Length: 311
Image (cartoon, rainbow, N blue to C red; front, side, top):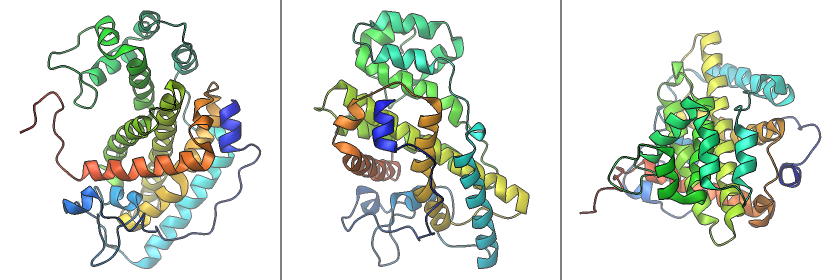
């Protein structure tokens, strides 16, 4: 818990800051903008924040309803999210094997085979991990990986750490879209990409830092899923349409990382001092912000299966 206390702070969480419109991430053109991705750029304006561009992959960029409806919806969602922050009983349950596996993954004495044996006790987790190992994002060879032992041999212990973290989190992040359509699917895709990019950007700072950066990205994604859930539920209660991408992006920008950090505290994740060693709290935030923007860029261009040779 040391890194959580240093990075996330302790004590009661303050009330939400005053609402602000999503701000441009930066002045540089991104690859997603060059590709003409949905919501990548305002009309003759600067690049939008990555949360807006992510939401625009599933929702219209321009408002479809009256401002009054949007204001009422936002007020309802903000109240639900604030209650979520202060009443942790409402947070999702921690995956049962998470403490044990994270402890093993951070123990240099634990072998890949030992980790695979623990994973094998949960058939659903084992199947999910093998599916990830064979997915385009994580596959390291053209042939299918059919056993945990084979997966360990191919990706190594460090690679297994990343696969296990994603496999444990994915069931928690499942959510029916409702009024938000395919936004939950886009959020999960973004979470995997952003966590992977953050981990790669932390390379050179040690294996603990790489894994910790990935976990920070996954927790941000879990927070984003909970924001989308609150939005979906509010739309059902008020019997209204989902808001546009600008409004949704604002919600994600203001709440996703904050709620993710609250979940990390509530779950009492084991100590990962590398998270602090990356560059301090401000450095980690900047690293994750850049990784999150780059992940949206990648989602706005056609993906290529890494097992297939480039043209």
